[in-house]
Length: 134
Image (cartoon, rainbow, N blue to C red; front, top):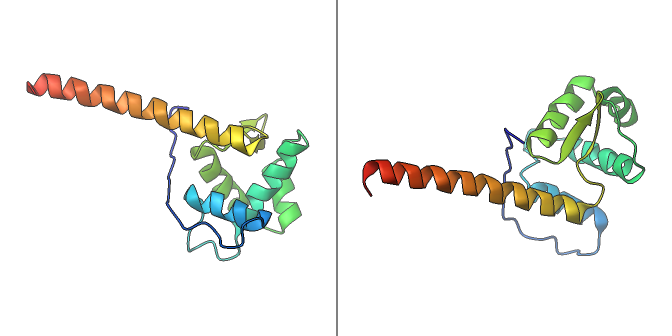
């Protein structure tokens, strides 16, 4: 994943633990997927549809998602692009699916992505330090 953009936001866990919707919203918020501009929770709703599709091993097109949720295709494409940039969603033949159908495994994959990115950053910092004689 060459251009991965992962944002981690430390937010307070929901008080009502056990509510799957609140847990999913917290997970997505913690990954920086929600913005104040997303007034109708489009990204969350799209994530839920992709999660359902992944559980059924079914990739969805942007048109499928737009029709299911009553959203414009442009809105769906915008949010799917963000989900892809974050490493959560992959494209397969013009259709979209979560990278892994198990959220815990998906978070493990994101963690590995972050570790690889930091290793590359640290190696660059080491080269820079060496070149500066530090």
